Image 1 (cartoon, rainbow, N blue to C red):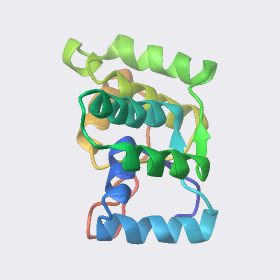
Image 2: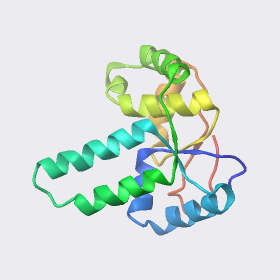
Image 3: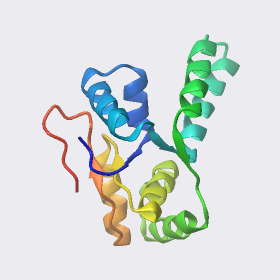
Image 4: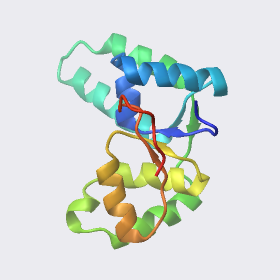
Length: 152
């Protein structure tokens, strides 16, 4: 069970929504300890953007959008603030052109770094690439692994 709060990346929240059994079990353990999941304002944007784009394209995503909006009401939502913006600028300026394409990930990582909390993601390699380039430390946890979760 986690010893401290952690920020869930958009991909991890998607796995919770899809009822991935391994991720769901870890999310339940987290909820028992902390009461609410912690997500970022960037994750809220990314998910809302996806649902609204699908709805605009005529896809029947009303129920998913409503379920997500209800979920957000029960989460701690960390904002992208001035401190996170400073970290994001450091990371972005050190990244390659292709890494800069992952702006959402850079913003989410910056929030975790600014708050000094681990980031729960299955995309550890992407985050490790740009945080290493910027020489900033981001602790990463993967709830999708069936083995015991590890911090980095």
